[in-house]
Length: 426
Image (cartoon, rainbow, N blue to C red; front, side):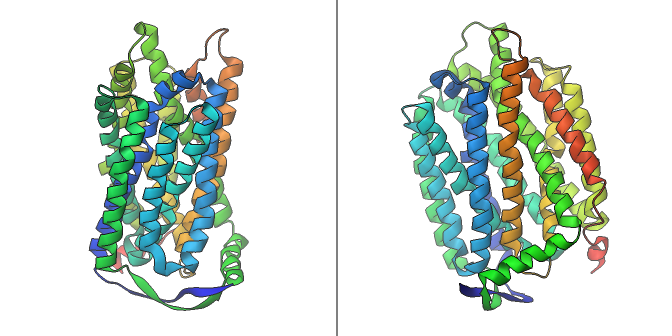
């Protein structure tokens, strides 16, 4: 198969800042919708009577589906670069429709399939949007990655409170069904605005799929990309363990001090923790990204991973509802997304000049999804096996995540220098 592919380093840019603004804003809606599901997770767990292993299967399916489409989607985006606007809008619309199906699922099996489809559709946003930002702003790559992530974080901060309020007047199913109509309108607006603005583009020449694969494969001849994939995957394992099971843990802790809390009450308690975990990263993460554009990726990434390991270790001994636990969740959130942003920017640094931005983001997200899919399933088995008789103790997420995060920190020490600290003076 032969298709048009980027051939020149010069990017022909049409209103790049406005296009970046649309992509960054759209990412906020993508996370506002997809991650709102986590607020509903303790309620859905009760409705379908799901234990830790079943929850692990749900998360594993969600991650695996997203990873598969990220990898294949990134490759296709680079081959069919002229359809990026349609890809972005289609990603949001398809995600919303899949979660609508989840909202009307009659059983856990259908729910898992629908949520997996929603995750796959939503994940397609990242290789498209991040690829555009990367080749349009190469000197501020990590900063743009961080702004993109911070917009997603803003969506995640707002969502828990919206969901908690909505549960006062509707059910978890009503939230997912109603959300589809909102995301459908947003996706139509994105398609219209990007069509009016025009997307950044390169001069193109014919490139075969085989040439695309060879360009990617050539990056594995040095240790930078393989080690980066290991580091990013391990970081993702720890992150997925905490993010997916934290709402369930908070619901468990609430039930230990209150008898039969309502769905709205559970969501109201879960909301501040999830909001704070992502909210603290909105300002700090772009600053860390900008610093790494000047200092290099490796030292900043090692520091971020080490901090996350220490905080997670402390949380082993403080998993009780209250101000201290809330503060620790916020501290963990400060550097949580910074690690993902740095890994993304580093992968694009490694691939610079090869015109495979979408493929690299897809490869990184697919790699993270592989590790991330294995992680919650393994953790679910650990919780079921090592919990006291008659109870599933989700406090076990913290020792598990601390060990995995430590492994990621050690692996990061073997990275070669990545990124050009002199870019700031270019």
